[in-house]
Image (cartoon, rainbow, N blue to C red):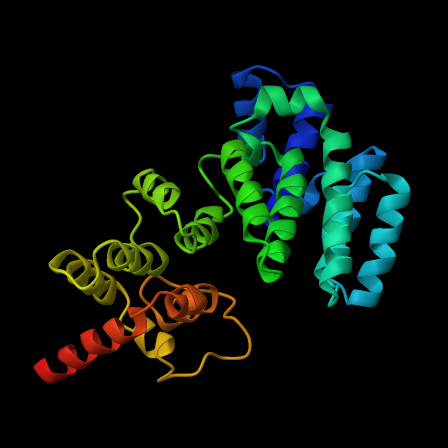
Length: 292
C-alpha cells in the first residue's frame, strides 16, 4: 500500500495548499521533482492520521498492528480499512465476515450517499473509496469460501459497476462463479465484455464453457488448445498429476506455473462437477503426449 499512501500524501498537500487549476497542480508536481515523498509534511486531520496508522499497521507484527488500528479507530470510527485489517488477521470466517460488514457500513457512512451517486463508475480512481471496495471484495471472498455463491456474485457485480475498469481483478473470480451456474447465459454475456483477455482463467473457462455447451467438438477442442498454448501447466494440476502447494503464490505471471496454481485453486470444483470434463482434459493431454 506504499504507493497508495504516497498518492494520499500528494492529494492531501494539494488540497491543503488550495491548488485548483491544472497549471497550479502542474507547477506543484514540477516543484516535487527530485524530492522524496517522505519530505512531504504529515497529513493533518483525524481521518488522515487514522489512515496513516492503518497503513503503518500492515508493516508491523499483528500484535503491534492491532494497537495501531485501535488508535486509528479512536481517531476515526468510520475508518473502513481498520476493520479490513482486523478481518485479514481472523482465522474464523464468521468473525472475518462480521468485520468486513462493519467495514462496509463504516465506508458507506464515511463516503455518504451523494458520493455513491456522483462517483459511481469511478470508485477506484477516488482514493477515499478504496477501503470500501476492499471490504466488499473481502466479504465476497468469504461468501465464496462458504459456498454462498449467489450472494458473492451480487457483490462482485456491484464492484464492477462501481469500477468498470476492474483494478481489483474482480472479473476473474466472477468468471468462475458464473461458469459454475446451471444457467450459463450470464457467463456468455459476461465474457463478451472482456474479449481481449488472454490468461488462464479466461482461456480455460472459455474451453470448459464450450464443452458444457457442445461436448467434445471441434469448437471445444480448439478452445482447449488455445488455453493449453497460453498455459501448459493447468492440466497437470487439474488432473492431480501435480499437487497444489499448501500456500497460494504471492505473485503470478501470464503463462507461468503460479498462474496455473491460482486458477486451479479457484476453479477445480467447477471442472470436477462438470460431467466428463476431466476425462476430456485427460484425453486431450494424452493425445498431445503421443504427438511428441
